[in-house]
Length: 452
Ligand SMILES: [Mg+2]
Image 1 (tube, protein in one colour):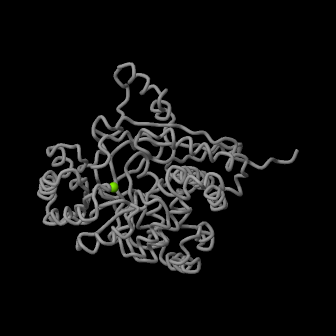
Image 2 (cartoon, protein in one colour):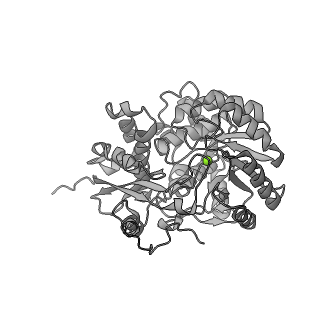
């Protein structure tokens, strides 16, 4: 018998929803009652090592079934693929997925279908890192610059970043990477916390959690704003009084404003020294962000968690529209597209401060920032990863925070694997939690997964 080539044998999907809206966790001016959810995918194989590739994209409840259906529509591209080829070159699958000539009509490269591509591509990277016995950040940081360039789709961005420029950036980024790896393993990567600042929290809870954030070693917090100006002024004053002048305080409007409103509102909060204003308006409005940035300085302008692809990021950078670029691990088409975006940010010299929180977004995106520090930008100056203390316990390799820093993951993979018991309990609508909930019975599990 000839040995068979191990292949992907199944692409299983799950609609997983957590009832976070009940505690107003995650509430902001545009999203008052999110149920943090994952459209989750598992790539199963017939390899003897037993590894699986896990990936997901994040939604906030209704529509998670639509997102799952989009992932399922991609299965035929993945099932039967030889694992050695797939993991040696995820970029080819990435191009096949975004190039599906019928599914492309639903985008192109934006929205539900593109997020589905991201979930599948990220699952492949999880599998590749597990097979390489490395955490993903290390797999990327150890990779040859030429290979990393081969993983980037330069279509539509080559006017701003050529493959040769990307190669030069990655070669330069390697200088000193061994020492930075040691620093990362010892100190971790700086984070900031949004936990105090949800819009639905009382002033007492804001005060308590802001004080706790400083005690925990964070040097930046973030407050949700944009629903009511008088409330925002009171909450910003309250938070600033608690944290003092030496801690950075960002504000996040979650796309609530028109351009003129964004300018007026940000100026009205300026006395509390906000470090950045996040998502002041539509994520598609490149020129609007540029106008806001010109008007609100020295307050910085940040966006990215809803920016749909590398092309819009390119334009934000070309237009001088942002001071802070916020990648999201599960919004664009996966690791390959985020490599393109990290390279664009490096070319333009704009710091990357990832969006995270939700469910599993901290677990994923830490790997991208750590790669960027070790082997691309080479710095953590003015760079912080968002941190929210929700739902980490549902993951096998949850993030670990120490003194306001993300500890570097050491387990192989992309930290994407959710506990089987959590998947079973919170699968919608037939998981145990939701069945009991409909029957009016008390939950057996703390849905938040938070410490307290
Ligand atoms: Mg935000």
